[in-house]
Image (cartoon, rainbow, N blue to C red; front, side, top):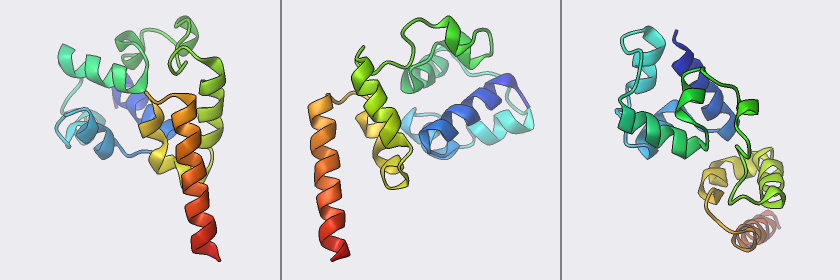
Length: 128
């Protein structure tokens, strides 16, 4: 099992998504994760690695185990906003929000709050 596979699996898990979903959203073959896990594939081409790194907000060297997250100043900040990043991290822990989490990556705090408010209102109406 390659370091690339381990990192991708870890990143997918932290987002609450499957490897299949990541592959679809990054325009990779849906068998990529299986191929990496089994050793049939050991790397991604430069364009694919760049898309995956951008998708997760990490560097390509991080994907390949050549650096740690601590080596990346500002890594993980959404729109360079620590408050928005913290808010998203809190939301990511809520099971009902995991499936929506990936859509928040490029949204503003106001957009995210509006989505969360609408979602919670929907759940309150449905629960009555």
